[in-house]
Image (tube, rainbow, N blue to C red; front, side, top):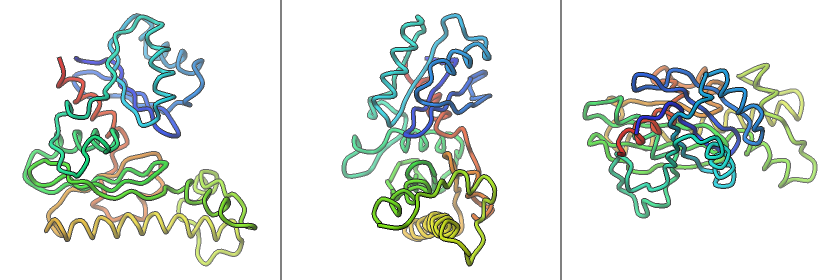
Length: 256
């Protein structure tokens, strides 16, 4: 199947990608519960007539809502759910329990890096995942920890006095919170931001050592918080906002 539109249904946002000539040429991030904005986007892309769509996601309820919306409009639709049919080898204890987004990122990375070298994928969204695709193109697992806003929310919910800090508002003004902080809000912002950035660096380093890829490797950075983390990560971290969408496109094209 060759989709015109691919959609990644995340825990916080829904990402749409417009496809042409075998690649994602445009991407937008939409609210997960605002069908009016979906209608407007379809008009912007001149896709009011029936076109093929491919969807994957990690939030079943939102995915079902969008699937119903698309089907009501008569579009041809492929929902990627069977992980065993993705064009990627998986070597972990329970392959079916691996998040679909992690595997789709691996599909995209393996397709882009067509040489025998380890690939490390950082997806900084609601949660942060750091995964390894080995030099043979096999997904070998990785690590998961709370993302920036989830970590800030945990500090508020698990303490009596710490405020809930909107990390989006803080980071939109200053992507690198100053240290030492002179207020509780900025202390939380700085602590959370650097905990996530430092965790990413440490995990990539640890997995690269295990893979014997301390020098020769590819590292990709994607996800909703990728842009604000990129300035403090090493230059080898290649920013790839549409990575998951590219994986959806490739997985859909691999199916009849």
